[in-house]
Image (cartoon, rainbow, N blue to C red; front, side):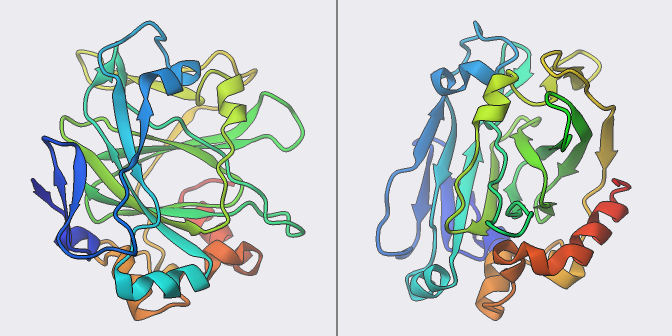
Length: 271
């Protein structure tokens, strides 16, 4: 069992045998099984579509909350999820999420942001921003390596993939607008993200996806705390909401946080 109580701020554990989260006290109104992403669900975005090392790749628990917080989170229009990605590779490619883009908030010109927190293991977040006018081209591709306690903001305008490059389970949480619906088709059409992360003798190797007309150089960026948004290493995101129910308004009203997002991208040296 992997105890996640300290990192998450919730009384939960990951059972490595049953591959299920164990809730040590009542969480929300129900305790449903996770949505499971299988290899067959991912074929269109894999580097090696013939590789069959594993069938179950990752597990998604949506709408996790303590019973006393459930109604408040729902009334705010938010959702707290936990995702578990198994270690290993399919062929040479490290196991990853399918990846998605975010929908635009109507009338604002901003796509909804999202924020992630690593609870256990190691994560590589691959962010990519499409060119606004040129199809099949990208403006920027960013790689952020994160460890337990780190927070990673997915700002408006970016799609993303999460990769598990480690030899242990990657367990992460995220907050997102409750009406959020991931957009998968653009990544499926291109056979995955801008880069594939492959296992090599000398370490991870990133191979550009030739399905894109133009792939910018991979830009490696550090985890960047955003104090204005309470994204501080070591402070669990669930506790942030418990302390301040308005703390995640930037997920709901991204149009009001233009300067914060611009400063964040400037800090990553992305223009």
